[in-house]
Length: 264
Image 1 (cartoon, rainbow, N blue to C red):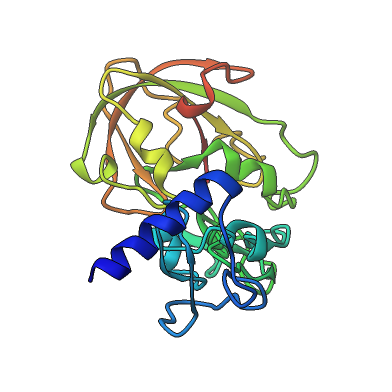
Image 2: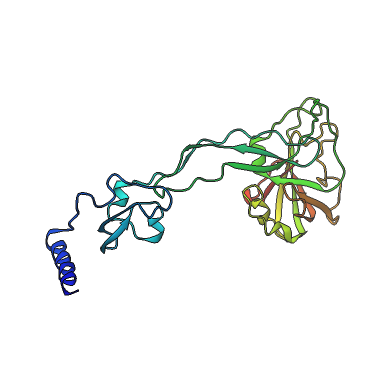
């Protein structure tokens, strides 16, 4: 017992004077193991400066028992993913639906490197042509809205003939909304959290949602007076819905991005 204590203190003294002593087979040299592997170990200095059994598996970072040279011998490789694909078309035409974009893993994470992000995103959408290319027409009901970001990848094909209407912007004051808008936290529905009672929002009416015959979008409220309560519904979560009143019609939207939406 006394002998082991003397040896331990001698090791500490030598490390203090001459630096840590590492046997040839110690540390993580030549062994970097995925996941949790209790056999992936050495007798050497840990990163917390304790000379004992240390590990070279990925889980040692969380358990804080890595060998001192784990960061240099087992260099962390973060996940590397490709660029997003283009947005797909809507899953179903002539009704509120969703579109998809994907990316793939190019380099898998290693040695506790940063994990891969989501490889698929979905966003609400609506197509105004069926699979045969025929116009679906405008449905009656609440205004269907989604984030303005949807316009970046929107297919602006001509549905109602030429010339194509350049569109306009409607401002509304939100009167009410359901609680389901506040709990959305998925990437493609997070924009719903910015809908608030009493806030003024901008909603753009653009092709192909706009009709070249009537120069309107479904539910845009152009013909309504300022006291009329109008209905709206978020695409991507049909339970996120509410009411608003028209403020004014503008040529272009000027609201902050989080309060800018688009009719679909």
